[in-house]
Amino acid sequence: MSKYEIVFLILHYQVLEETLRCVNSIKRKIDTKKYHIVLVDNASPNNSGKTLDSMFKDDKDITVLLNEENLGFSGGNNVGFHYAKYQLSCDFICMMNNDTEIIQNDFFSVIKKEYEKSHFAVLGPEIHLKDGTVCKYPKQILKLNEIDADRKRVEKLLIKNKLFIESIHLFLYKYIGKLIHWKKIRHHFREEIIPDPRMENVRLHGCCMIFSPIYIDKFDGLDNRTHFYGEEDILFVQLIRNHMKSVYDPSLKIFHCEEAATGAAMGKDYKKRRFIYEKHLETLDMLEKMYREDLDSLKGYI
Image (tube, rainbow, N blue to C red; front, side):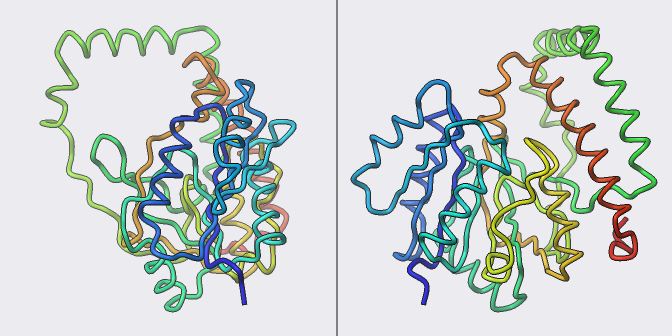
C-alpha cells in the first residue's frame, strides 16, 4: 500500500511568490490527507530555493530538493519524480508549473474517478487563464509533412527577432493599442471560446500533468532529450508507442498564470522570444527524428 495517494511535484525557478501561491492552493484545496508536496529548485541564482528550504524545513507535508545546476524542465522535474517514486511511494504524481494553482475542492476525487473509468497513464486538466478564458492549445502533434513548413515559419521569426524587426512591430502594436484603449474594448471583438470536451489519446499541456500508477511503474520521469520545450510532444509519442492512454478531462481544473519561471529565466522579452524560437527549432529536428524511428507505430497520428 502506498504511503501517499498523490505527490505534487513543483519545479521552482526564481519566482518565489508564484511558488508560494501554488503551494498554498494545494494546502487549501486538496481533498485527501495522504498527500505530499515536493519542491525542486532548479538552481535559482537568487537563492530562492534556499529560502524555500528554510521556510518549509519543519513542514511534514513538504520536501525541498535543491539542484546544483539548472537541468531544464524535464531534467529538473525528473529529480522530483525519482524522489516521489522511490522515496515517498505514491499512487499519483501531479507535475505542476510553479505558476499554476488548484481551484477546485474535489481535485483528487476527480482524478480517482477518471482513473477508475479510463485507466489513463497521463491526465491533463482544463486550464483557466488570468484573463478569464480557458486555454485552447493543440491536442494533436504536428504531422510529418507539416514539420518543414513550421520550421520555415519559425526561422523567419528568428531572423526578424535578430534584426529587431519583431521588436519594432510589437512596440507599434502596443503603442497603437494604448492610443485606442484596446484593453478596454477588446472584449467586444473577442470570439467566444468553446471549451474542449473530454478527449482521449491527445497531446496534453505541460503546465499540469497527472501521472498514474501505469506510467509511474514503467518510467522514472520524462524523456530528457529536451531542455525547455517540446516535452508534451515527446511524451505523446512515447505514450502512443507504449500503448498507453492520455486523457484530457475538463472536469479537472487549474489556474495558470503562464510562463512566470521562463520569464524570470529569460529577462528581456526579445531574448525570451529568441530563446523560444531556437528551442522550437531544436524540438522540430528531434520530433522528425523520433517519427522516422518507427513510422508504423504512429499511423493515424502523424
